Length: 191
Image 1 (cartoon, one colour):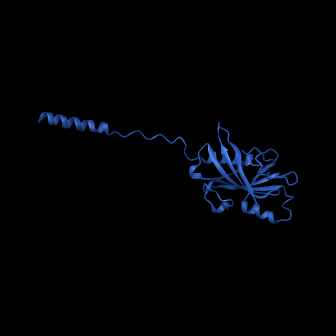
Image 2 (cartoon, rainbow, N blue to C red):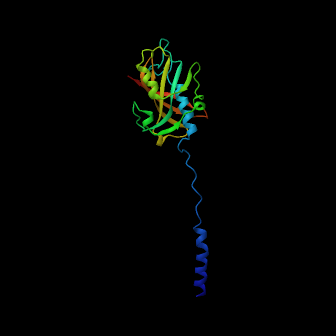
């Protein structure tokens, strides 16, 4: 009987030690991108868009005949499905991040002035007779497949309205191989 009591005592004392809480799981190596990462990646793709030349052959958005000195950027970067639609209305999509003046300063576009402006207001200018001579382009951005976006790689769907090309919907990829974001054109369909 003494042996059984000792065995039960030992089991009772040993059981809590065996059942100690496991350490919390390590955070995943790739989580969703932070708002700061989305802003930086978005500005990298705006800078990499084929404004004046397009080595991929899809076509430049601006030309010497119809330059784009000012780029009006919709402040809402929206979340889109992986198969992003060609056209989307930014104020009818979930917002991934809002751009501000500091955010758009990250885009390195020498010779161009970046301004935050509503896509709807900007695209409405297209109907004005002075549109082609205004030297303005409108841009709306969406993160395609936000649920699978990584902090070091994102795909963006852009809508660009530029005098030289009309309405275009470039697909862009942003990657951060060594701390700095870089964008590249995947495709550039247009009207």
